[in-house]
Length: 456
Image (cartoon, rainbow, N blue to C red; front, side, top):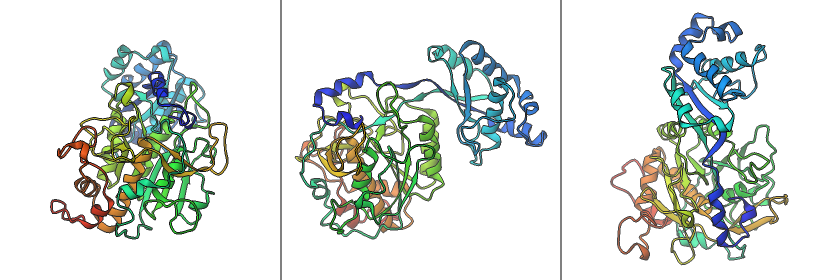
């Protein structure tokens, strides 16, 4: 939810019924790359109109059908170095579309990620029949609507309650290692790098052509929970003294009156995180639609040693849906608890939940300059599984710093295996509301897990 809703009462959750499941008129398409690589090799690898004309009918046919029947407006390569710009050598719309397909293979350096494009079509044309027709082509590997993703903050009254979350996870008692060489990725609304609590935090900020301003404040709030400077006489303390790699994945303008992730930027950022040296990634976002494209990226992130930590969602009163990316295999799913160590009223439940962390009335950093979408400045207390997730992300950074070469699964097991069982769990080792229990940083950094010998 956007920060404009943070100041509303819990009844505002009913508005979530209007949220998008998929982005209207956006299709993720992946063609099989090996046949095209062979064709490009035979043609000297030049992306020209003549090369596009040689595309097999199994690709040209679906594209022609989409132009004629679905108002195909644009085809953009997703993971190519060419980016979003159309090829200047194309003299017609059809040539631009086919060259974009070729570019998605020829200009993609990531093995296995070639062939991905984003299609823009008439939203009314996207039907199950149309998607099935695309998948009928032997050259099409994936065809799916672009899933919508939104922020996981929710209604809260800002209050100066100090940082009860640090006490709840045993931060003050924990023997915290130096995590200054650990990089944590945040994919969110951006960050205010001028905030005084980030003065000496190493931050790489990727906002590309978007404004650097965090107009919603959500990303800055998440970043403060993770890495706000400690013992600097300013504001709050973050959980870990790590480096931050921040990708702004939200547009500067709302879509249909609300803020959704820019699907292309988000997927491109996930792929960029794989190559960035990041150990842990925070995703305080979610949506109800799953995606084969996203699944592939998370599988590769885990294989490349990145632990993905994601919010369970805030729609408990709106049907308690399963939400992604938290529900993907290998992603560490985080729910929220309040000051009484009970499930926050908004926090989704489900069998895929791993653990919980403080998520109600969490005091953290917000931008130093107000915007039309945000009145608070400098510091504010917000609620949401968005706020619980960075507690776990930062804890994972500290465990990674202590455990050296531990892989993503080892770090995940360490955090889940040392969680505190809560009274509401009634002596069960895991529940759908709390997972394995409340994040316990002190235990995670002091207890050796015999089943994970490489970790700690």
